[in-house]
Length: 309
Image (tube, rainbow, N blue to C red; front, side):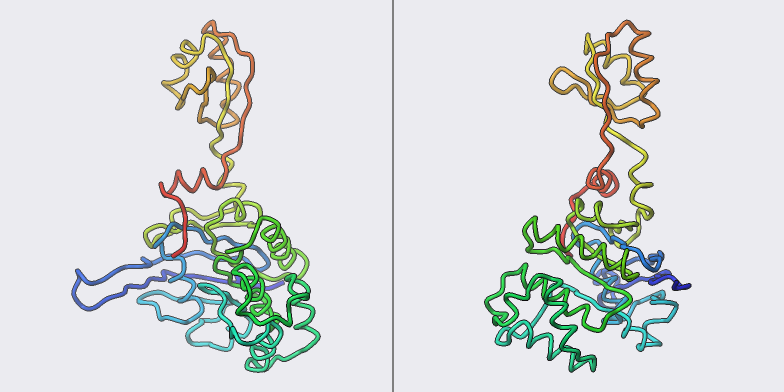
């Protein structure tokens, strides 16, 4: 078991622009978090939040203005050798369009000095491209290029995989396959996967932990189930509905929807809500709860939909 976290970000920040204050843009404003080894970790944020800038600093593609980034305990800028343990897709997968998928992987493998024909064939099979491996990439769809990018990122059998929008362009069936594939990398192969995505439903199903970045700052971080354990949406069927709403609205946010009540509360509040209604002379017919989704939580925290940046 790896003793160091797979990723440690320590007060990392990046400012773009010149010396004049009005020309400066603080893309990332001193963020700190850790990614435990062997987990799938989601990195979320709306457009322009600083996700891709953070990933580029983590891979030493751009230098931070402040702070440090570590991979498996090694400072990425001072110890470039640690990047050999990393595979990545950043801002879309790019290939030679005039070459076939297999030939693209062969070129990348030979360039990185880890050519293994059997591994290339196995990866093409794993990402569902064996039947199209001999086709030139210029005829590939966006989703097929994403699959090929995932295979390319795994060529050197990395311990850490960094993926920026890995399911972009895939249909629902393809997203399901890649989701299971990524989960398998962590659960059965012990790899760490750090992924950025705007598809919050996918993130919720696949990730152990998430960090939410907004305006260059980490606004929430933690285990997905813990973050979503707080608020729930309760559906209450009661009569008279106006009286029920009046009894509850001072303590809980209440909205009347199609003759019933939608109440933002915790699961633990449910007995108190029912008791208050009954004691207030309201007939209660049904109370059901729906756990807050990651998308609901995200919108509550940042107030806007996620996207690419």
